[in-house]
Length: 484
Ligand SMILES: Cc1cc2nc3c(=O)[nH]c(=O)nc-3n(C[C@H](O)[C@H](O)[C@H](O)COP(=O)(O)OP(=O)(O)OC[C@H]3O[C@@H](n4cnc5c(N)ncnc54)[C@H](O)[C@@H]3O)c2cc1C
Image 1: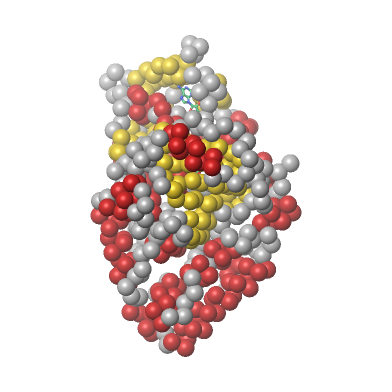
Image 2: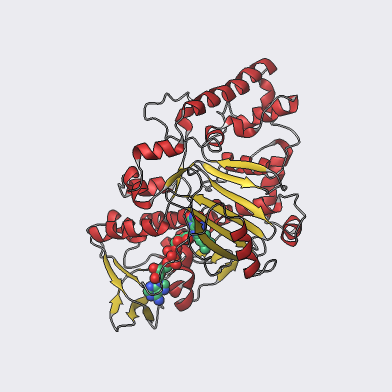
């Protein structure tokens, strides 16, 4: 992704050399995304149908959470919007009032994404959809084979002048005075010199961690899951336009449908479950025949490097940090690191303000996502296992505590600057996890009860009509972008 974006953004000014090792390989998991990947693909001028065909991808309207707040609960975190705002208030404020009056339906009925997803319906917003129809509000991401995407981007980057060298970095030369990197030496003796080094070496964090020893901010107290086992299985039904995540006793299981198979994985805490038990639980809960053996346990720790940019090294992807994949944010964080790097691209003098700005923005972005993830764990009524008992009682960051207090009081949410997840996401997950506001915003009383009924029920009916007219997800794929 980094090489492709740099080649596209600075075609004539930069010489990009990519070193990677087939012997080491890639981590090979990561198949579910957030809608921002569409912007990345647009920057690269990648044609959507071609991308879906090549990566055997499907469309994603949101994530279905099962058994999170309590065993038996199910809710969808859909992208897009909930209803339409009116005056200064978001739709959910009027919904809260209707709920207090006793006639509101489930919040999922007021978002086109959330209603369409479980019904297996999908289409993008038509280009000519009038602004006042819910059809204009469809927001989607992708589920795809990340290995195929990497291959696709490799040929894209090589086609635009990126030189790829197959080889293993075994040594790094630093300037004795400044500590800036000067070159890396490969196992076969080749030396690759450079002005800027981008560390995309995955959990190895070869340059940022290994050479520069950048400190690691450990967030495992709040996000205790630290292992994952993945396995693909045969598909047993048409692919759902959503990812499913089901909470288990020591973690959770993902189910990501692609065109040709279903990706599955069990993310768990090694404090509360052994690797063998985790693999057995994963196999037990597959809905199709396994297509491989379970992967070896992938080990990780929630957190990030204190500095993602240090001297002339910028860490992108897992080398910089990792927050567990519950909300599919890792590829987004790589993408966002790449855009930030393009925006703040240094000259040879490496003005320190660029590094400082980069690091401050990245810190903010990671922390806001971190809080959103913690919300799924701390707001639970489950007490059926050690993990959930731990999560119910663990201390949480003050920033998250404030968000919860605001919402629990009168359903208020205030998006902090450019944080990734906005009101739709926070409101759906707060409600889904069982946080019920005591009241609603007093300004909702400006609308009479009669008008409220017309507005809230009208929204629900308009969304239901639009969803009924949407094609089935598998039919849309077959018509526009079936993998060959
Ligand atoms: C369990 C799990 C589930 C995930 N699910 C999702 C998801 O649903 N959605 C999402 O957005 N993200 C997800 N992710 C994250 C996603 O997998 C990564 O963001 C993505 O794969 C990018 O990884 P990377 O390129 O940083 O690292 P890697 O894929 O590990 O690539 C590292 C590269 O560095 C090279 N390398 C390493 N050392 C050397 C060396 N010494 N010399 C030369 N080359 C070297 C390797 O050969 C490789 O090419 C998940 C991650 C995990 C662990």
